[in-house]
Image 1 (cartoon, helix red, strand yellow):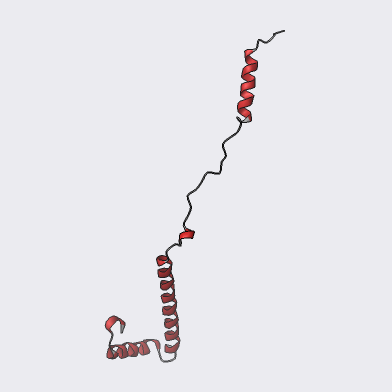
Image 2 (cartoon, one colour; image 1 turned 135 degrees about the vertical axis):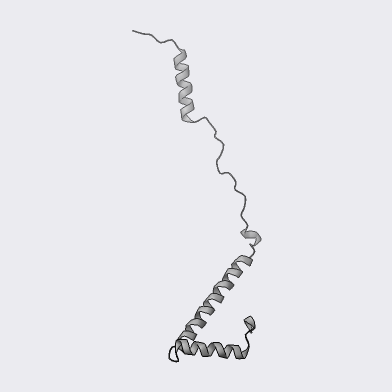
Length: 95
């Protein structure tokens, strides 16, 4: 048995529980305790499985590749700047 509890010690624990809880509520408390223990064991086994699961080779993350293509022509702002620079080189007539 877990925790090295012998049959005599187990009977003593049950007798104390019977005195504290009472004979009417003892089955309900036992059922609730068993249900809680079962849920706890299920949760711990799920966590252990989640930790021990190894990723499959096709699930490994691929390195990121840039999706931005190289610009074929200068952006419109640079083209407008070049035109205004060329226009400023020309002499302007003042009235």
